[in-house]
Image (cartoon, rainbow, N blue to C red; front, side, top):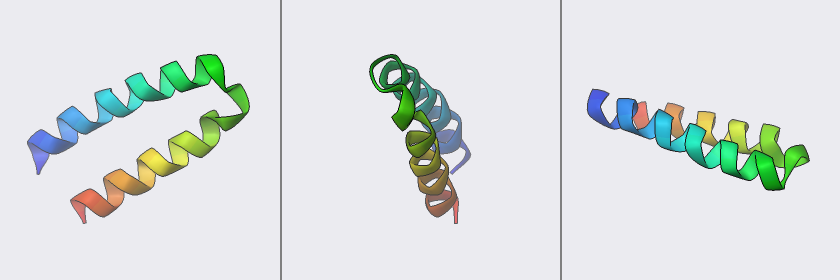
Length: 43
């Protein structure tokens, strides 16, 4: 679980940074999805 956590966040942030460059208004939505996915994954 901890390994997946430490790998999942950097990947999510990387994807987020790419998306933010193309779709600025969608960045908050992407953060929400990533956060929810992490919470569900750990829970």
